[in-house]
View 1 (cartoon, rainbow, N blue to C red):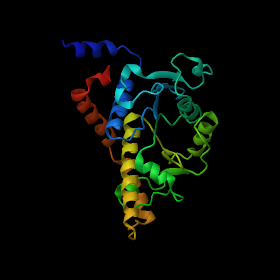
View 2: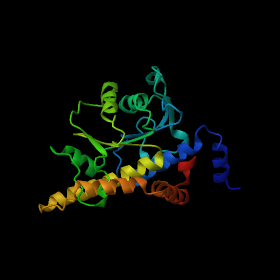
View 3: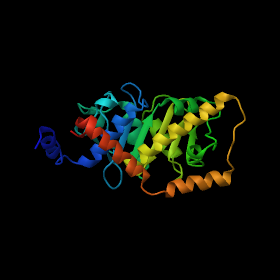
View 4: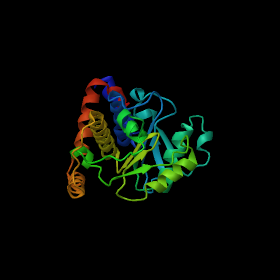
Length: 255
């Protein structure tokens, strides 16, 4: 047995090990896609039934360095969280803690300032029009936060949780800020975040041409969005293949 394999087997005893591996893979691949921002931005994953206990990245560590064992296990209902010696970033605690506390269906949260989603969030009209299949995927599936109120401390987090009250809304275009994506697990959420950034890139570049856009009808756009939601297994396969690649190239993410 190799040293690496032995190390992984020892970590199998770590609480929520598979969840940690999935989340660590999402961090590593997000960095490869250049969708991270320095040592900011945060992902979290609920691990208990009511969503109040969750894994999250530690304070100010680059996404490309994160691994399974480095993730924090936090309790959204613990008022002493910020007194811990390994306390999370206060804005991460404010945003993610509040949403996990108030919105149990948001099992996984991914917040980034990726370039194209943030450009979209910076426009006076931040709608993502359904000009292609990827854009149509999000038709009526996002909410726009029009009232940016500064860094995401707890009041701001609670306000964001209220904005996501519609079960159809799994993406928040955070005006003047970035994007927040929620989902049922890491695979579901990462896949949605990936495709939202792709859709935003297509839309922004289409706007840059200055030509008239080919906008799908509401009926077709909604049909596409539902078909994508019902399409089986893609998110799980996407993450599985990324983990295979990372295991070959950066196996320490599993440690």
